[in-house]
Image 1 (cartoon, rainbow, N blue to C red):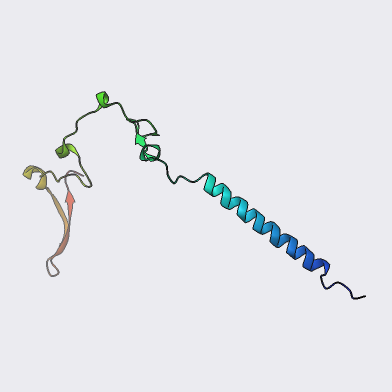
Image 2 (cartoon, rainbow, N blue to C red):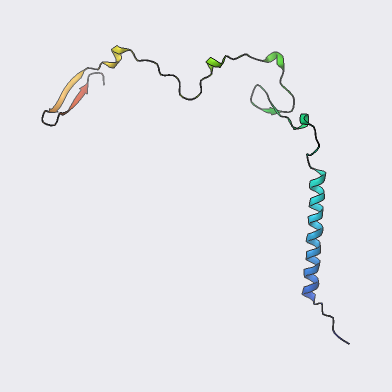
Length: 110
């Protein structure tokens, strides 16, 4: 009589392959059962309340506050023109090199 051609390792590999296939099918069925396809738009919407928290209920329309678009500042605020009196600074020359046109001024305010 001839010996069987299937060895122990071949049987174990076949068992693990079948187990992986079954596990893959189970995961596929679970994804199908938990999928969000076919649900309405209302179940997918999220709202933000007055504190910035996400909720599933729409905000109360009576608590709405009107904000003018001119009051919203995005980025750097507009530059305020400086007073001309503040632009003029006074001080004492501590060192000046006339050949180089270079020197230091000690500010009287600081």
